[in-house]
Image 1 (cartoon, helix red, strand yellow):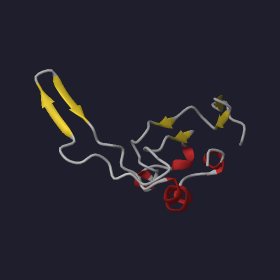
Image 2: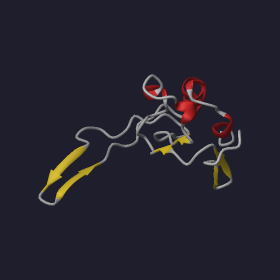
Image 3: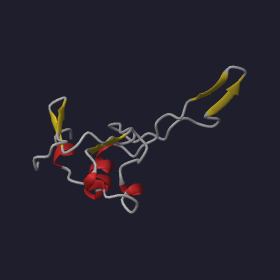
Length: 101
C-alpha cells in the first residue's frame, strides 16, 4: 500500500484512507464502478455473503404498523464461492479481501 497522510489501520487491515462504503450500499462494487473510481475508496463493505446461496425471505418482506415498519429481507445472496469467482474480480484491489476468503 502506498503511504498516504490518510492511511489508517483498523482491525489489522491497512486502508489507503478511512472512506469506506457502508455495508450493502454498493452490493459487491460492480454497481458503482461506472459512477466512482473504486480504487479511490479506502474500502467497500459488501452486502451479506453466506457460505451457501440464500434466496431470502418470502414475500411479504415489509410490514407497516402504527409504530413504524419492520422488514425481514432474509439477506439473499449467491454464496461465497460465486462472490469470489464472479464479484471480487471486478472489485478494486482484492488483496485485502482475499485475506478473508
